[in-house]
Length: 365
Image (cartoon, rainbow, N blue to C red; front, side, top):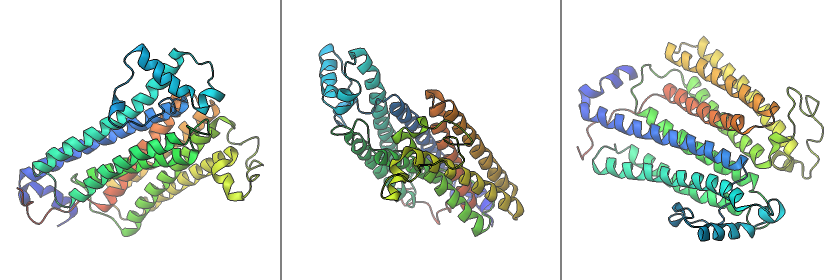
C-alpha cells in the first residue's frame, strides 16, 4: 500500500477519531506557527526602532503588566536612564519618546508569553483527552522546552546591552532569531507529519536535498541576524556592486581574520549577500534535479514554488538594501524569510512522508 493510500485509509483503519484528533493538533500547530511568524516580525520592529533595551528587567510573570500610572512610567524611565544606551545615545529623551520604544519591547515580550500560553494550555488539554499519540509526546514536550529556552535566550540577549554596550550583542541576537525559526520549523514539521499526503516519498537523494535546503535557509537567517545586530544593512546600499565593487576591499582588516565574519559590518553584509546567491543557486539545482527525477508531480510543483519564493525573497532583500532599510521593507524581508523557511519544511516533509499510522489506537482510547 502506498503512503497516499495508507493516509487515505486512516479513517477506515482506526476510525474517525484518530483523523479528527490529528486535524485538531495540526490546526493548533499551524496557529502556533503563525504566532511565531508574528513574533519574529515584532522582534524585527523592536530591533529597527532601537526598542529592545527599554525594559531593563526580566520579570517572566509580573512583567505582563505594563506601567499603569505616571509614577510607574517614571520608575521605568529612571531604570532606562541608568544604562549606556540612554547615557550615550538617547540622553534628553522625553517620557513620550520612551513610551514609544517601551511599548514595542513590551509587545514583543507579551507576544512571547502569549505563545507560551497558547502552546502549553492546549497541549495539556489534548494530552488529558488522549488525543496525543505516543510518538508525538516527546516531540511536543521538546517544543515546549525550546519555547522556555527561547525566553531565557531573549533575556540573555537583552542583558548584553545593559552594562557596557549601547546595543545587544549581534551574536546573541542571531542566536535568538535562529532559535525562534528552529521552533517554527519544528512545529511546522510535526504539523505536516500529521497531514494526509497525496504522493509517495521519492528517492532518498531528493529527501536529503530537502533537508539541506531547510538547513541552508536557517543558515541564511542566522547570517541575517548578524547583519541586523551590526546594522550592517545601513552601511553599503549599492547593488549589484558593494561599496562600488563586485568584491569590495576591507573585508579582512580585523585580526584574527575570522573575526571579520562576525564583527566587521562590511564582511558580514558581503557574506550574507553571497550566501543568498548560493542559496538561490542551490534551490534552482534542487528544482532541476527534481524535474529530471521520477518524482510525482506534487513534489515537482513544490520544488518550483520553493524556487519562486526564494527569488521573491532575494528581490525583497535587494529592494530593502537599495532603499536603505525602511522599516516596512525590512520587516517584509524578515517575515518573508520565515515564510520561505516554512515552505522549505513543508517541501522536505512532503518528500519524507507523513507519520505512520499507529498499529493500534493509543491505550487511552
